[in-house]
Structure formats: C-alpha cells, structure tokens
Length: 172
Image (cartoon, rainbow, N blue to C red):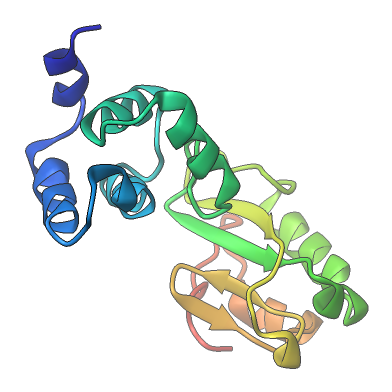
C-alpha cells in the first residue's frame, strides 16, 4: 500500500492531534503511545489498518508499534463496547474476592471476560492492577474507579431492566 493511502486511513482530526504531540517530542516515534490513544479515542479501538497507517506516519515499523500496542492493556486491538468495565485481578483484589465480583458482573451482563454484550454497550475485561490495592476489590469504568466492592455494591451499580446496566459509572 502506498504511503499516501496508509496515511489517509487516519482522519484529519487524528493527524492534527498526533501532530500536536509530535511538536513536543524529540522524534516522531516518541509519541507512539499517545498516538495510539488518540486513534482509540476517535475509533474506540485500533484496527490493523489504523496501526499500519499510524506506524507509517510515526516513521516506525508496524511490528514495532504492534509491540507497544499489545504491551499496554488499555490499548484495544479489537472492537469493544461503548463502556469498558476493567475488573482488577491483582493479588490484593483476588484476596478480597474479586473473582466473585467478576462472576456477578458477568452473570448480570450475560457475558464472560473478554466479551462484549450483544447490544455493544459493555465489554468486560480483566486488568492486572488498577493501583488501588488499599481499596480492593476495585473496578473501573471509563475514568471512574469503584472501590471496596462487594455483592451489594455491584447490585447497586447494576440495575435490572432488559439486562442493561443503567447506573454503571455512578458511585454506588
């Protein structure tokens, strides 16, 4: 694929935002993580086509950028729901029964870890650590961290009604 075709896979808004980051960096590939996050912000995930275009734009190989994208668990390489539920499965959370919390959420949503609800609203993903071990177990939805979870708090976060989560993201 020609270079112009690769770059055209990125929108003008994406390129403008990436260029703002590049302006503050010593070299183009130094903004790889920020650029991946920008693409994901606009698209919800980073497709293979977007990754190749971005690698070309940052003057690095697609393999190098793929290594970065797959190292960071908050860069999504396949489509996810509108809201991503990150359930911490660190040792601290596990000791405090995060596995029970995860099963309860999966049952309420009707999906397993790594899956997205049929309506495309929610994706349930494990995450190694959310950095709130003193408040275990925890989960995150978007920018909102939910701490000291138990069965009752999960019930309050998730309300019944067409198996949709209507309060997710609010404080229990």
